Length: 231
Image 1 (cartoon, rainbow, N blue to C red):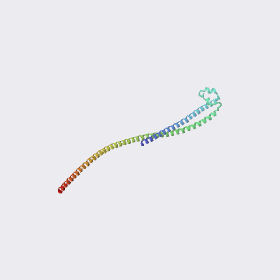
Image 2: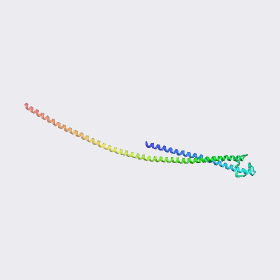
Image 3: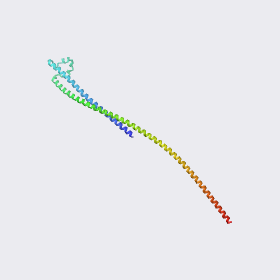
């Protein structure tokens, strides 16, 4: 019963340690997803800032050269900026683009700060999770070690009990044999006693019979004497 209780308790501790490890792994995976999301958003914002900055520089060059910023022919011919038409809307002012760039730069700064915070938090949680996972694994190994040691102790105790039982059985058999011998000896003594008593009774009866016969003879002799006297 104690061994079974110990095994059940050990299994519960192992299951608890496994669940702790799984939870820590899920937390780390969640943190990594959040970090990757912020990093991806930051890269997209940086790419848009670079694209718009290049476009503004190009437009300013066009204006300085008295070229129309709405010249489709120029944008088509310039393969390097063939995707800029999709970014620059009809009638969009370069100043508005610069404002958007400033806004995006501010957003990039915010995302950069958020990314640094996320990186710091991720590193801290990564260290903490690593330590916790290590502790959980150490706990599992400790539980396994203690369980194995306890199992060895229980097996040794069980073997000792088996040995004790075998010794008790052997002693019991010896006692039963000894008792049987005593009973047989007692029967022999009873038989001898009965024979002895029977022999003594027979001897006593013979002695008593002889005494009675002597008495009868004496009475006969006395009667004969009296008869002789009467005659």
